[in-house]
Length: 601
Image (tube, rainbow, N blue to C red):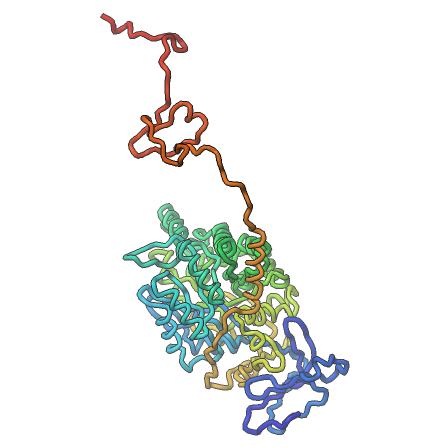
């Protein structure tokens, strides 16, 4: 092995079991600087030649290397989260954490890369909001990060801003909502109408950016249902959110956005996030088959783990339990999210089963932290005002491992890595830099502790202060023991050991291989299927025109004559005119003639 300069940070992980999404094997890892330099497999001597340059049989450890014994522990790639929201607290966005505290919780929980959703104010632009996000994050982020810009409206500057962000800033995600846009002073609020939505999709396809659409009820429909329910029952509490967002509406949102993405001019890949209901899950699976696998899905860890945690905490039988319908107001308010968490443990099992299938379903955190007192207080006068939020950024990997790997057995270790790391990294076009343990990849590594060595996870380290914990019923037996971010050891023995924030803003390249590699072929196939049919030109008489094609004017041009009326389709008449049927006078009509004899003199 070439000599390693002494001025570089060198770490040697000895005796671990490496888990990637497609393989699992025992190996040692040598990390030089920020990347994985070598992997050493101590037992297998029959390795293919293609791997011999990556896996040495006699790896010498540099004298200045820091050696960490990880014998009999799983070594997994750092988690990648495509669905979280960190930022600065404001009146409209009363967040309980910051970039610093939120990212600390992320690395403690094994997440080393986040895609942060950035809201755009009504009077702001995409470029201005992105610049403010970068400035606010600064050097206070403990994990690598990128941005997903929320597109609330389509203005004159939107498309040019999108192009600037993708090409110049490496920002390749846009969050969209489809609805009936409400306009106030010429500004579109909250959601895009169908024409605007279609334009943004076409722009994303042209730029190679991935649009992300949450499977939620449109705000217009939700507000209408909420108003009607509150009018009939003003005392409704947090359960209003579950009643006003029916499962059918979530499934309908998926159908609509898929129609726009795949049945218009050109195909646009799509990530459907926040799949929280049985009908939405079924609809996603159906549409993914129809669209040749170019639709990708994402659920949240709260949709999987919160019902299981409540089941464990309350000691109830499998099935439905109280979440937003809890008799305790604060507890019910703590579960309010968008879309609502369905209080059914059977749905959790279905979601876990889909994670283990070929449906390309991944798991995000859906993180947005709001203080429980704020959530409970906002809804006292009107329950519809309760902020929709669940804090889960630091709990995602631990909760999924406990629910799906250790206790459920629904996921093997490779499927776990695919759901929380490799799948998101491939969609973000960060693979194999992120989401894989291989030579040349970033040294984003999580060493998982041995089972049953953990007495109790300290959830308070993973959640902001005074935020409701929807995972409190879980009792994980293991957790991330060591976490490395690009070779920097940031977590050791489950504690932050490096107080310096090493997070870096990522430049994401467009046209990710997983999402965009097949779109041209799909478009070409559609053009082949829709070939033009050759027909002879029509030579018959054209109603309403003479032989020269000139329009015929008749005395009764505002209605049809009898000879035309019976065989010609009805058409709309000019305003103020009636459809007049032709009639014939008869001396003796059916039933006989009638005379006004009682009025005769």
